[in-house]
Amino acid sequence: MILIVGNILKDVYLSLDSRTEPFETDKNGTKWLDFSFDTSSHHYFYRNSSFGGAAVSLEVFKNLGLEAEICASDFTFDETGPSRTLASEYRYILTSEDSVSYLVPTVPVNTAFTPPVSEPNYLYIDRSAHLSRATAENITAYLSSHPEVKLILYLKNVANFPHSNLIDLAELILSEDSSANLDYDRTVFISDRNLSYKNIVEPISIERIDKLTHLSAYSIAAATIIGKFLLGETVENSLKMARLNVENSNLDSTLTLHELDALQKSGGDESLELIAATLMASKKGILAADESGGSIKKKFEQLNIPDTFENRHDYRNIFFTTNNIENYLNGVILFDETARDSMDTGEGIPDFLISKCIMPGIKVDRGLENFPDSDETFTKGLEDLPKRLREYREMGLRFAKWRAAFNLDPLKSIPSDHAISENCRILAEYALDCQYAGLVPIVEPEVVYDGDYSIDENAAATGKILDRLVEELKNYGVNLSACIIKCNMVLAGKRYHTKSTPEEVGRATAEVLKSHVPKEIAGIVFLSGGQTPEQATENLAKIIKNGPFPWPLTFSFARALQDPALYAWSGNDNNLEKARQAFLDRLIANTKVL
Ligand code: 13P
Image (cartoon, rainbow, N blue to C red; front, top):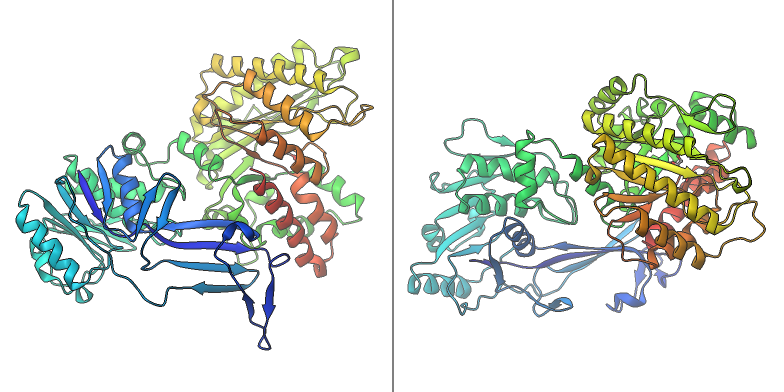
């Protein structure tokens, strides 16, 4: 058993809604908030806790299958989560629009240590621990009366760590301080650029160690090295695993032993399952900014905006330059033109999104074509798909989307069995091509909203299409755990005499999905399909209320996220801020209901 000495909770980020919070502005323009510490009475867009090193280490050890506990922390856990007993580094970070304030305890409290009841195999003093002299002496006394317990020590800064007897006792040291004179046989060095150990010629370079803001990446690296080392790996292999864990963890979870082993086997590339899970994680959504040239032209025409490259570039940029989109989005689906375009700073758009921890994806279908002598359509684009996917993968794109559209006309028995099976077969072939090329497929069979049909008729059609789709995905050998379904909500058609209520949409959609989508599917995302932005959000909320579901659910809207911004902008750059705010409002409203 590993006993961790350190702190659990570090920072709590609250992004407050300045429209509803009672801020007072002083004569210098500084905003003040009388903050009650009862967060439930405040309106915040998002709350994110940053865990201290002990909590992060505990998660990593447990994910590696090791037994571990935290002792001597500034917090204790009970059924409802951490409760505060002592404060040390703990602080609130309040953000509102452009202002940020910090609330910090005035008296820093050191980490406490209580000798454990049963003897651990290892005592790990992690980077979050603040030891007073008395506590360091307690630990030293405990170790000398329990010689079987081995010490592992994390040192941020050796000069600030006056407890040299603990340094002498440590079996393994992890240190950020490469200038200190430490025993190189026992020390692994961790920096924001690499992980190194004396006899490894090439230090393992590591990216992202300073990018994971809500989990300490240094703690992930250290705990993975320790954990893998204790599991019998060489130091070199432990360092490689640490790199994989830091570079592939997301803000919610570090990788399990199984995922790490799978990643290592695949040469360190992200696995498709991991990409899919990242896209569906953390109650965020996916923006579909992928209207084809034809669709954009139509939209622009309605507002008399000339359909030029500059205007299309400016329009897409509204969404990418909105502040804090990474708080609400895991991914953005791009159209080819945008995937090859750059931000005004010159940075390529996929790279820009990646730098914000948003995954870029790409629409790869080439639109709809009618079956011969028929009103029904199939989706084009399979011919050169493998070649295009290879190029997209090299451009940094990690997932793709393909839309099949089904008009629903019960009087004409549309969609026909032929249209359903042909489109589902094409979707499955596309999905398999994606997985071969290292991209996660989003398969989108859409029952088109614009029609005259009841909610029950929609439910029957959507269920039938999903059944056929799943059958074809399985026939083609598509890995369902690395495949996302993008689905219409189940509701009465736009031209039907009665509009479905959100309660009805929630119930019917949940029922159809639960009975027609296998649990292996990585996630389900919804299109908005021409509903008003508010209607799409209300319906999404009610669908979520009808959970729990065996897969994560989120939104992947185009119109319901972008239209308010497009109208606010209307091609006039003086309206850019208004447009960004309109987009942000939709992101906030939709993430709130997840
Ligand atoms: P809408 O949300 O506008 O339906 O678009 C979603 C989409 O990606 C269609 O392919």
